[in-house]
Image (cartoon, rainbow, N blue to C red; front, top):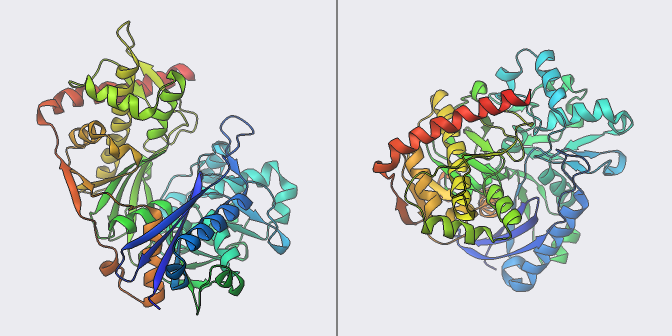
Length: 489
């Protein structure tokens, strides 16, 4: 029987299961939706972990019906998942409360307390204490839900919870663990100092594995359910962005991508640990052994265009098309895309979005252009602080739903002064990266040989005649954040 490999990507909106063959070619995929996160209070975001498991089973069940022979040949499984979520387990692996998600901002006070309590936090974790990270969430639970805190036996990230149900093992990979604020990122090990600051110790943590290593084996009853024969190993896997980097082949120093998804990411691989906490850069372990990466992260990329579509009653794709039809260069309107607060470079969960420069001429198309420019400026902010950390970026690959807009890619290339390469049609997201990690774990293959870059469909070059105008526009954009924040104090 021909071997195949399965990647499972646990997202906040659903789960995707994807199969590849021994040569890394995609055989097929299936998805299942998750229930939308709930927001009990403004700035909060939670989800029931049981819903991830339901969606995981549904996605793999569907894939097994579509490709029964290929699923029967699965030898390795890799996992990808949304990062930072605090999944709290008590005795008997009981889920104690809904998972507090990556975009939950309730723990700003606890972040300040952690930074004061651990003076060398930045040097150990390589990151600022941000409300999105797992550690501050646990500090919040300790303060506000002490009865639940006392029952905690294990703290798992979302994909580690799915791993537990697949294998019975408590394990986490380095890339996802780096987003907890508990990892000594340079040493690739839990930090006893950081754990203690939130009232925890190593006994509450999963063991650590590299993303391409074996973390456990699939339970027999699940292998039987999907018709899999023989031993099926489960790889350490990766956090969603590191998994996407594995899927697109960005694992060597200087290789990177820009993602225009719900959130936005500027990602670059590094050969060593390169923090820049002053600019709120994320410095994490990569999923590949001996490799690290940096990210600038913005919380509302295509989500900003989705929001505009919601309030105007138009489809986001139609808005983007209307903006492109009337585009001739930077517009008058400026948009600050801080609808859910911001990470890089401001680390401000309380920041809010703004339109500035509105006039009687402002219409949905012009507002859409402003939104796309605002997101492009936010990515430019990320590039600026990555450069401050000594990182140079070559040509970037573009992924995510926003990359379907040629105008948005032109804006990015011009503002970043960098060529943006668009891969040929295909799936290069977290599920593919996870499947590649599953292949490495099952076969012992060298990740550098498995995680190759895709063929390129087109390359978008900077528009030199617009660069000065955009630099002037960007300067106004940067000044607005400070000016607006001063009025909110």
